Image (cartoon, rainbow over all chains, first blue to last red; front, side, top):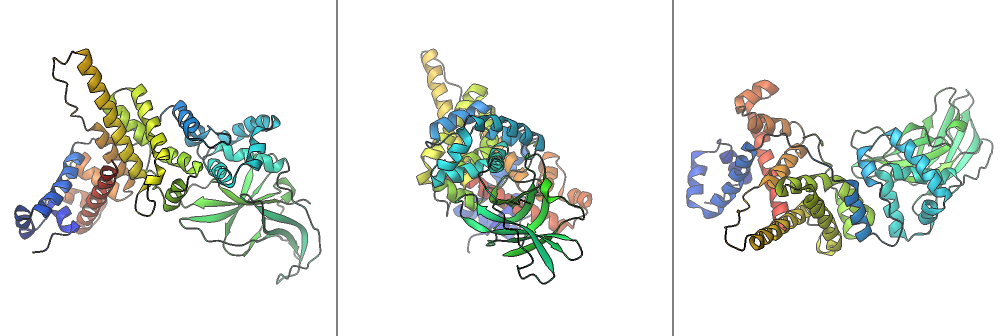
Length: 272
Length: 182
């Protein structure tokens, strides 16, 4: 007789197995051993009360780890704060103030610009943990990402008549290479449309989301998902793009958390 | 468990980690540090020792990342395996201290507690997601029969049993990963 499959073994551990399977485990050492692993789990489950509360280690633990493992680049020890206030807008605001003063001292933004590619990737991931992301937006607002603007009239080949009132070149944040454009168009009926043209790369277990962020890095508006090389976003009537001039594309895990993940890949600024 | 379902450590993170991306270590820490720390606290009964173990675990993981194969291994399980070994090391060191202190006259208390495993198991139950974690909780934490669960969740009995079988298989797999790694 061949060995029992996992479904049969699990059924036995649950007390649901067939008599033939149960008899087999008394004669087959391999299946007896496998069944023992299952009953070890059911036994352990029975001993749980299910009220295990995970405790977070103090921030000093990460700081020590960071010190012992960090590459030469500046170490961001804010991961703890990020874990605590993962999606908290308020945490972000406070961090912005903190990093604003820090960048006045020249540290974070200079590091972000000069580190090796691997460290730049690290910096990007740090952003995803929360506050440290904001420091980079701060850098963007301070002029690291410069949106040169070409104002032109209705020449982008859209189906409908529309005037391009502003065009923001997009930059890939990691490499600072060109990553397409975001055009603000006004159609004949007055509707404002943001047309994002960029090389679209589908993500696994995540999607790309397009945001407009204000220059104070205090507020942001989600426009929706990037779905292709060219995606149009119709803006609500009366929406003032000058209030939210930074175009941002982020990778959003499919975790149901509606706020910005902090994992921005592309950015540009609309100057009107 | 108040920490909520853990994010499943993805393949991309595993590859970034193996490639030496320090940001991946941070993300791993964010995902797993509370689990590691809580396992250590429960087993060692000392916050200071648990902090040391947590620190050693992630430093070891980082320094040993070349031994981690992202195509075969599960980064969270691998890290938990390292944590279990560090906890065992700490217990062994403590036992040596005790022996020294007691001049080897008394038998050292055997370390019988598997409270770290209990933390891990509870964590993995949570990670099963709904409806499985609820079904497992009803069956094992509250002692409900399969029939009672079926009525309570308005679910066919066969479906309840099927979920339980799958849950056990998943838990066994998770357990193996951490054990093999250690």
